[in-house]
Length: 258
Image (cartoon, helix red, strand yellow):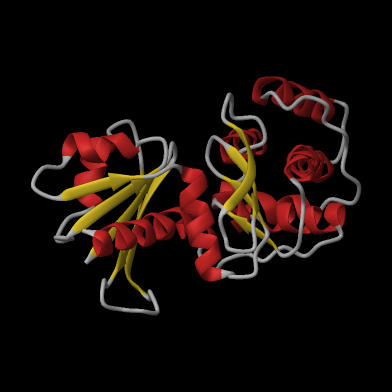
């Protein structure tokens, strides 16, 4: 078997592929929180699996080569992993938006699925899953329900700051003024969409657009992104598994060469 692992700041994902399957159907997938002990989580996610090769991506990809012995390991950047994963799921895709736990990536693809241009926000949690997760706690709403909660708003209130701390201050101030909390939540989602649409236009937005990463599970972001771009993005069934899938596909290509 070929294992692809995406070790992100919030979670790690695993995808297994059969090296003899020309259709590259996923044999097994797992997902765990990264926590403050990713080395232990890595062992848990690989429990009971003995792959021929492990291909790793994400900010913690070096952990794989450091922690695992007796198995061939390779690594690749998140940009390449997402390009490979999306090109497999959506061969006609020309643009990728990935909003993960602590970074956002906008990627322009050539017709052969290779990366033409990309932009990445990885300096802070502004406009990422962590941004939404933190602000959901302000509203005392589970992060899984925050998008649906925001969609109940009527008019998004402007949130000027993308800094998580300052955005929280703005939201708290609006609450103190008696503003509708759902309108505030809608405004917070809108601030993310404004930031990401600017990134997409800078790399060159072409259809089809694929929206991946954990935040692609948020219905409010999908709706507001569609309205802002006048494009309906394609969303994978498991948008948070795309990086691990791309890593596994890379591992398969390496195994063939070997």
